[in-house]
Image (cartoon, rainbow, N blue to C red; front, top):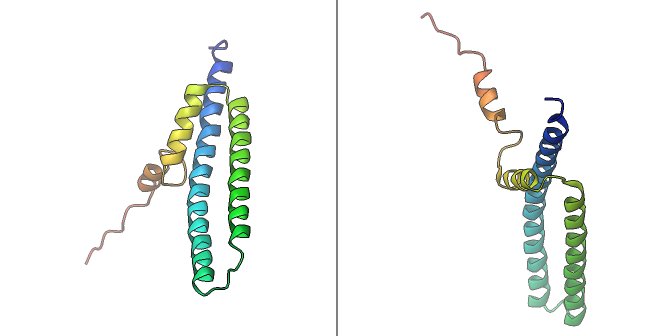
Length: 124
């Protein structure tokens, strides 16, 4: 048991860490999608009402933003690969954290339901 404890700790920590990253990525992707749609809407309205005269500036800014996102994504990938020691547990945690819709851990929803006080009985 004592010999397995460090390995089990690494697996558990990898899973929890990757779960948090997956949850965070899911939130950020939703936010990025909303902001991208809003930005496209603003650019469309500016073009439609002829308020946007320099199209090259907008294209250059979009290209720069894409390059920045690629650089930051590569940095994030290196960070994750460097700090998650167990690839299988990390991948599972990242996947489950990304697809999980509820807040909390797996059993949190069930625990809340079972811990509720029973409904009062009407003796009418």
